[in-house]
Image 1 (tube, rainbow, N blue to C red):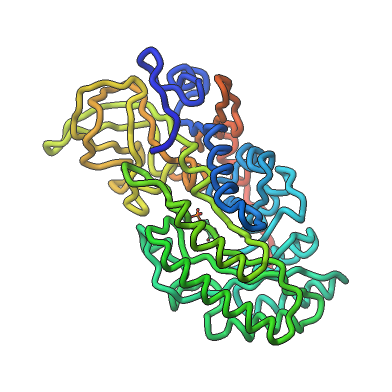
Image 2: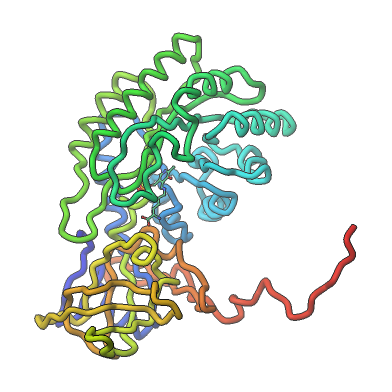
Length: 423
Ligand code: LLP
């Protein structure tokens, strides 16, 4: 774990801010993000890729809060969006169209119209039908759309969970390998579109970089064949995201190994590299701060019931994911505990059978490495208001997302139906 949590006078601090004081001021549950960690990770990545021209497009599905987007924009990142909502967020956060790439396996006509109208740098297509739709939309708008083709390189991917592998044969993502050249060539010939990129994203939390090398080899051969067929408009090669983040004591992502694969390939190919990191940039910046409501003993187990649950952090329940849990007041005594949320189902847990510090009711905990795929996957299940989000930096803190209110919960709803007759 590389989150800069530091005990000062017996209390954990993040970027110089006491998490205990923060819990009093902002209440719990709260997501807390370290600005310094985001900039450290961003710098590490750009230094890793320094030998080749490259653009970092933050995959904002990992955490699309405006405060996070603004922080990454200020560092020089572009953004990768996958829905009209993410595009809207990127625009709200001040990203220029040239800094936005738009991907996703199922963009609606309305989303494509918005992306074409916004003149984003690249719209990445994942099927021939989508490509034809964009060509028609751009023609109707009297403009041109810059197109990337996401290829499924159909390699064997190693990741920690089946749900986050995306580059294997039969996965729903990308243009199947045996159609890739034809679809890319079509993007070259259709009206109102320009083929500027080819790319892939083979999965998230990649435990082995060999499949990345295999995929790159396929992309290199594809680029060679497209060039031989007269395509001269290619500018970018997009290798997606997927860099590994340690959640416990595992080693950090092998950035040197990553560079050793990516840099020579890009030097040979001679296009500008695009990377779409999500988790790598923000996961370790975040903790979820929660208070223990009760401690009880049931069926021979000791259970902590916290004020955060699966509606705040879905990953343990959905992926069986591990997040380290620390007491905000560190102590030596250990216990084996279940940490569960307040939601009315047994799947609502944050950790089971966990050897951790021995804490009791009223105490504060942090769930570590929750900056990515935490707040953005939160829900209102059990009509729980979503947590606030706080950024900390050099001893200061600021709320970047207010806690939801009960009024927010029902804002789109009505108790007085307006019945209409079918047209
Ligand atoms: N590019 C594309 C096209 C993607 O689909 C993704 C992630 C990324 C980039 C960023 O990947 P990263 O660098 O964050 O590994 N909810 C899951 C993760 C889903 C990842 C989906 N796609 C989790 O909590 O582990």
